[in-house]
Image (cartoon, rainbow, N blue to C red; front, side, top):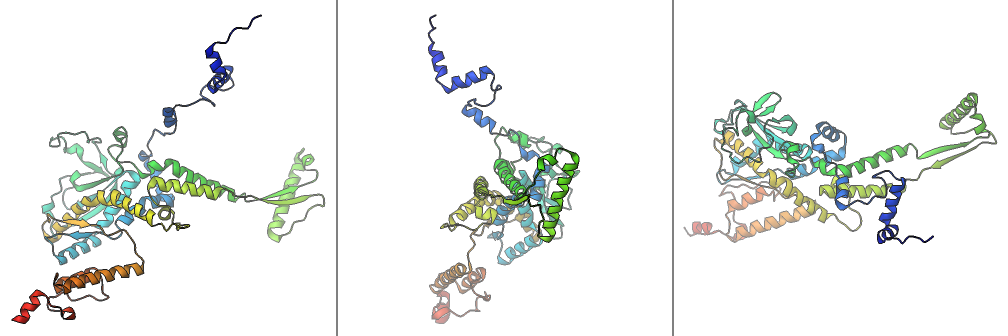
Length: 459
């Protein structure tokens, strides 16, 4: 009987992996959608996404922040570094005493602390804010000019879950002058109290795409959102190590007639008592009595590969957060790497993500302080952020020497007055004592006179 010729389609199916997989499915060896199926690139991306947001799970995020130190570190550390040295207030309408008075007022009233804590809540939950509490009706717009020196005022950090907002997606509003835009329904509900939006400075987390934004009720994303995979790997590694610690040493008893003894209940109970008695003697007396035909050995489990795996997991978390491992886990740099480049990249991230986004929140709140202390709001008020770099004692002294020599050189050349020189020395703490800044308190350095001093001598 002549064989039928194989069609090109059948030949291709027999000689390809796809045909083999297809024949296996047709034969019923694998269920539909099981092993061996080839996924397209889009299918792979679909299967590797969660399709839900943990930013909406308040209880889960709160519990993780309370229990896991790594979560506290990744939330708090960048914010603490951003505000660690405070801010330098600058204004042409305020003199040095006024700026110092404003800085003291900020410290006493925890102004910077409230902003810092609000940034932490924004990083943890995806949103936070600083609420201004005065003796005015909280449901009414904040009247800054009504704030006087004796007006009680408090700056309170709140998170997004403490502020219920009836209008969730206002990004699409085109007419901001509409009367309905700031009606009674637009107020925040703070534990049953209606709070006008002008009394809350909102700080949002990382902005989500427009497709996801409605699910987050107009707020930002939690920082844990992009860490779900890497932090689960870290926690699973810790759980595995924790469980393996109890099994690091395993006692093995080889008893004659063990299998036969297990055939009846009496024999099984006798074997159990025998092992319990041996363990008790071994624990308390460091001795073990056994039958001459029994054997005992102890096996130690090797944790090979776990440390290398942990290093990779830590690097993955650090990469997701754009934080160096040395900063996140407190591990010193290894090998020839000094860690300077990592710290510079981290400082750039802190400058861009925290300082730049919170600058005008700080300025607006400082304006409130100026209204309370001085009765007006400077129009040219601004702030400067101190350097994030931390110098050792030797480098710090070298920098101070260079600053002192520069100021002294400018004074000797007549570019600045003696009073300006003294102010620069005191501001930078360039000398162990404070220099008198009055105009007639200092003698010229090395016989060098300023133009004004020469005029006095000529007279």
